[in-house]
Amino acid sequence: MSSSIVSGIDWKKYMQLELVDDRRLADRYSNEWVIHKCRVAANMALACSPNVEPRLNNGYLDEETFAYVVCQMVIRVMRWTDLKSETNGSYAYENRSPQDNPPSYDASPNLYVSKREKQLLLGYEEGNGPIGTVFVGVNRIWGL
Image (spheres, rainbow, N blue to C red):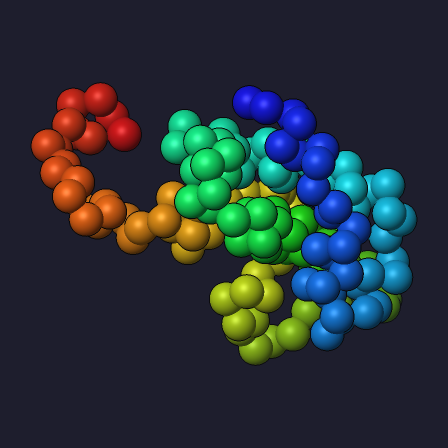
């Protein structure tokens, strides 16, 4: 994986754009933490398929879409750390909403590439490749 691709992206700029509607999250974390998590998430996004890095290099995957996926991975972790609970025996507090979150507002303690994000990175839906692609069904053989 090429670290020059990851280090050449202005993560701070993209995170500011993604967190425009949620300033309290943006204010809770240092720039160093955000940039570190974005670099780790970018490497994870590049590793999710061998086709992501070539698509990013040749322009089939634009930097803005790649940065969107990376930022969403980091924002899920930021939201998870916001969900805290505390108790001292007689007092209990849990900062969780009883309502389900919209899909993009899911929280997770771990960075991961969601199925929808992987489709954005690869440029097609699961099981459907670009026009002219023939799938031969070897996924079962190789355990993919």
